[in-house]
Image (tube, rainbow, N blue to C red; front, side):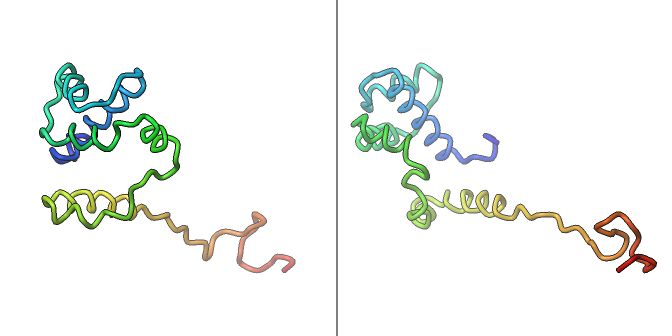
Length: 125
């Protein structure tokens, strides 16, 4: 699955996990702390990710709210990512593939009777 992610998606995941690790450990969530944790785990991300995440998630109450609220806050802003860097198209393709999961239809015509008999007449009905 990781091989299908773009560089920016991998950066977002790594930064998100670093924020969650800092939160879980009770540490202050700052861009410096995020960078330190990313470096310690061998992850290199674009420099703006830790800054953006730290600015938005510096309050532990916000992180707690995101963790505990079903659905998070995503969904409404999906269209803007495509214009920013073109990575939105890849994310949309993954979502479309997941939506295309279809149920297999079973042809019930002929050959099966609900009560185990044949459908060739000869029954009570």
